[in-house]
Length: 253
Image (cartoon, rainbow, N blue to C red):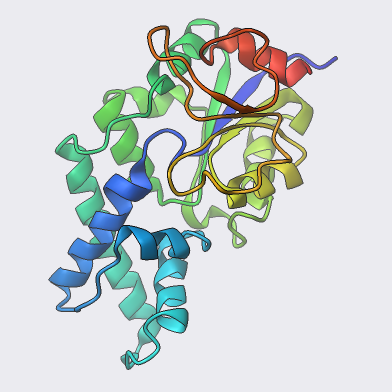
């Protein structure tokens, strides 16, 4: 049996409810700043989340939901500038402390650090967004806790393709059997499973109806001593919250 060597964390929806409380409001702030009358409410944004990547999401919105919008000349630049504006608003929300970590995330990360477990970030969001979240929740030095930050356009094919996970494993000189992934969405589990990684899911309001049959353990949250998780699928081995002992059991199972 291969011992667990690394924890690979998705960001949006997994570490924090960034989609609902961060990205969606930031998109709307960018639209307003650009003089656009677009507004993504929570219901619409849930549909847009079927596509990973912010720039890709803008394109999908115009292809499927706002087809009457007349695309400007240099449309690619328009999308890039709009997304860059959104990123600035997102980091502003982060700096204001508007987006806390989900229950149990900080505890698990600190436990992993104490035990010398290797960690990485594996996400489709931009490196700037990752930096903003980590620094404003875990502290200014926290980015260095993660051996690899696999983020944004570092690979051409985003989740649900496995490429970002394969890239991270290659950078860490690990095989899929050496690590475990933490995800929250259908595109996330498709990506990690296609990379042959065992995966623990913590659902959120946007992903609670997704198919997580490929995951080893599905929870409503990581939980804490005073806030137990609810097991939706898999075996929690009698645990009430997700700690490193349980993660190792899931990996070994």
